[in-house]
Image (cartoon, rainbow, N blue to C red; front, side, top):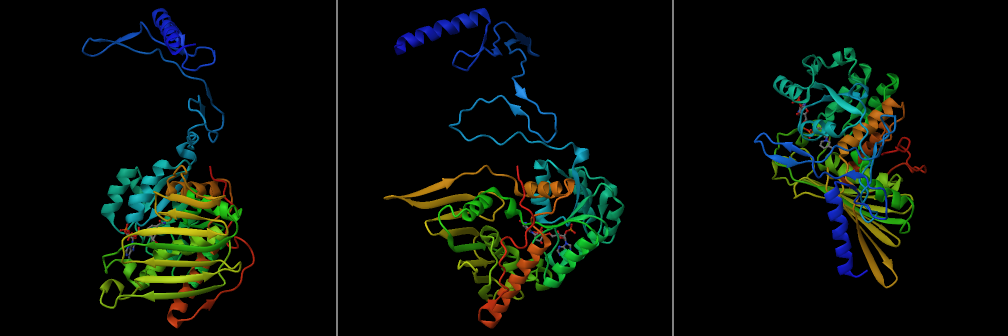
Length: 449
Ligand code: NDP
């Protein structure tokens, strides 16, 4: 049919449909008309004007019985576009795992509490803070009962609050051990922010306390649940572009307040390394599945800058893995922010910009294809990292599963960080125990939706 003929025929069909008030379908291929199209349905506005409307109509949808099975809505996009994520399957509020947030600082107020809005299995039910003003205000904002607000002194009374199943420790690093141990003694499961603590002895005591109380312990390594980092890990583990050979990773940002706990060694444990360098360390281990057998490091602090009287300004280190992979890592507390890694393999590379940021990851890969070098950007549906991580821990509790990001994983990072500092002090490489097992310190692989 000519273009003119097509337009004429289409015009006649549309005119006939509109005149008769027919139900027509947007779909082609002679399918049964689905949507009733209005011709004479009107409603009256408050100003007395008559407007046309559509008759209510529920398109076909699959509605499975279980709350955890997503509703499947009528599709309308072709495979040419990315599929949208499945419809969320939130648990009814009374079935969600209740969290007590300990410490109402930047991370809790700016990221964690807002992230509950994206959670399907977790809800905030209690707060712990040294500030009565913050407690009162935040409790009102998030619908927490006044009797579920605690100070650090009344913290142990959480044991009498049956709504609280998880205590999420978001305090300065030096307080993680005490509040984890007291929390486990109060009979609650523990999600503890990274770094797990300031010494191996503290990490071990936290693991022991949770084991003794038969409570689950997870260290909040959100990167373990972030889709871009998981994708890189999966490709590397499959040797998709050949074996991994070299990792270059850095995580750096600025700081300005020497009075802040991050600049006091007794509170922070160190400077840039335990706070942000840890991401390079832990994510490299996560991607490779191996443990370093040797480290070599430099640290430096500007002697004229009061920010770095107690903690290091910069730490640069290398890790040697049993397979021969070398990782070159750096972290800095006194530069514009920069968070990135590249994993070089035998036949390609993976580069993740904003690798450790809360959002905005940009993944590029490169490989040779005959005479062409093919560089691709891989765009993965983003997820709220804090909501994903909390829901995963809630699932571990609801289904009684061992968490992936274990206390032993946090302890291993601490062990390696202590070796990094030792190397920087002594100016020579420090050997670590050679560990043959893959993913030696992690729990069972999570099945993330
Ligand atoms: P903030 O300094 O913003 O908040 C810490 C809060 O801890 C304070 O607001 C205060 O809460 C409470 N607190 C109790 N005792 C002290 C003390 N002696 N000095 C200072 N604060 C105290 O820190 P962040 O929220 O940035 O970090 C908290 C934890 O979260 C750290 O372990 C950090 O490493 C980790 N973190 C993790 C991130 C991630 O992406 N996973 C990102 C950022 C931080 P209140 O006033 O309510 O008593």
